[in-house]
Length: 270
Image (tube, rainbow, N blue to C red; front, top):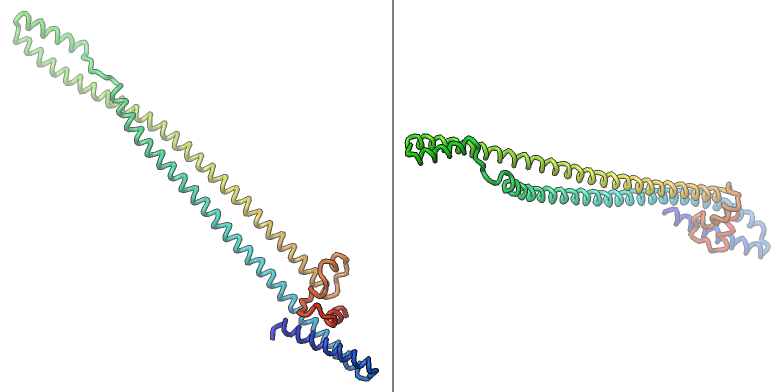
């Protein structure tokens, strides 16, 4: 039999004895009243012990439920913030990927622009132009052997100058792309710094909300402990303040299963 059933049974016994006591008093059969009073007194002691046991069980269950609610809310809180942080990481990765993809496209466009604007036309050197003039003069005066020699030199010099020009152009384009990449690196670093700053703000907000949640349950625990102590004091007859008496009536404090019956109220009051 559980505590509640035991308390109900004891209350019923006391109620039955109170009724019998009243009948004996009405009949003026006082010899049996003392015996009934002793039985009632014993049952009241037993009832009070069971009520204390019920009170302890109830308080334990309240504490257990509060801690369970706290753990459930902490788990929900943790999952909620894990999802927020994960979503933020995904958003940052998408931004970085998009920024990198756009950079590759811009890099290709920049290379085309540099190649089309840097040293647009090959310009022969002064020495090469002089050889060309000398070759033309040799042809005019009929010095074809000399003209052939100059032509060979011209073609060799032109090839060297064109090769040098192409190398200079490649170097200029590469340097332009290096400068372009350096600008990109600064931008990507700034973007990462903004991402980190955003993450820091989220972490700070998480800490603040966690502290609020912790404080909430600290207050609930303190309030519950104070309430339980008041109930315990009232039950044990040690709480005499008006606030304590107003806070919880003895019948409810003792977890009576039949608190509305007149006899039960008499038992608890005595």
